[in-house]
Each structure stands twice: as C-alpha cells, then as structure tokens.
Image (cartoon, rainbow, N blue to C red; front, side, top):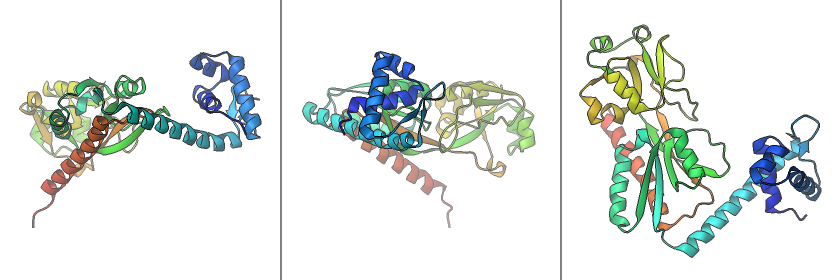
Length: 310
C-alpha cells in the first residue's frame, strides 16, 4: 500500500462536500485530479470507497468503515504537527481567546483572566466576543486559538472540544410584569404572556433556552443580553443564565420566578474548543487547565451553597 495523507484528506473532503466537483472547488484542484486521487486510494486500499451510481457519490460500507480510520490518521497527524510547532516555538508571544458574549461575565472566566495577567505579564492577549456560531468559526479560521461557547454540534474535523461545565438557567420577568405578582406561575400562566427565547439552535447535552415555545406568542433573539434587556421592559418572560439575571444593569429591574414546580429548567453545557493542529504553547496549555479548574471549583462551591442544611 502506498496511500498518502493527501489522498486521505481528499477522501474526507469529498465526504464533507458531498461531491467530487465540490471537493475540487474547496481544494482548488481540477475535478479530474480529485477523481484520480480517490481512484488511486481505492486501488491502494483494495476496495471501493464510493458508490458512483447515484447522482452524488455515496459511501460504500467499506468506505464508511475506512472513513473512521482515515479520520483517526488525520487527527494524529494534526496533533503531531501541533506538538512539533510547540517544541520549536517555545512560549507564545500572543494568544487569542474567543468567548460567547453570554459567557464573558462569568466569574470563572474573569478569575482566570486576572490570574493570567499575573502569570504571563508579557503575553499579548486578544479577546473576541461574539455569537455562538462566530466563536466556532473564528477558531476554525485561525482567528482565535481557543473558544469558550455553549455546547453545539461541531461539523468540522479540524476542531476538538472538551467540557468545562454546566450553566444554571432561571425564569425571569420585569418587576412590574403581571407574572411577578404571581411568583410561582403555572404552565397556563406562562402561556398567557409573550415568551422571549433564544433563536432555535439544537445543542448536544442541552439546549439554549427551550426550543419549543411554551406560549403561542413568542419572540426569538440571538443574544441572552438582548433578551434580558427586553424582559426588563416588560415585553415578556424568559429563561436566561443565572449570571445574566444578576448582571448589574438588569438585576434591579428583574424578578426571578419560582419554577421548581414546573419541572427542571435545562442547564446548558459549556465547552472549550480549539483546532487539532493549533500549537499548544505554555500559555495556551495553562489557560486550558486553569479554565477547567476554575469551572470545577465554581460548580463545587455552588453545589455546597445549594446543599440542604441539617
């Protein structure tokens, strides 16, 4: 067998794009070159990877099995390259961290950034705040080294994830909203008023807010902060992360309702993402470890605070 990494990357690209022509456009190569690369790979491996009968190439059973092996080889190569660059470069001169705007004010994040200023005083740190999809895109495009965001499906083989923790959500209304006078609303009470919710975005291990409206009247937004601001103006009720409900511009104008009798409000998973092939210098490695520790300690403190007293 004389298959090459380039052939494996072409194989993965055809699967991701759905056709030889689309893969050729992404790779900046002629379609004939892509077709030849796949044909040679099939010859080297001794089996057909694609069924070329349909209008678009479909993976054969052998192709599906070998795709997982190819992905493992490519991921290992990316880690090898990243490790080699780290050893040759030493400590980073700069680092870029992308954060979902709803997570910037979280105490664990702020605590780690304060510690980083002490541990790496000469490091040039760039912070990018954006929406959920922007964070993943910035990391994939090398605009950011690391990203902190709500857990979501990652369609790119270039990215890898690790869990940081879970974020508690609370039910809020403005202090002068009719629901504020009820205190412990029923599902029927909530259905009587406009719901403000995050634009539907399916996540793994939880969802941003509730993707199924609980009221026939609802508005969708792509920002928890915008949602909280509209809630303070009495435009509806919402579920937001606990720390956003306590954000100084909002906390004096909001009331948190008792939702314990309504069933559990889903927590949101938070994760750290990076490119598999990005160098893991000392500062980036320290940041990763410190974020894991900070979120773990924060969750332990919250659990202790909420534990029943004897």
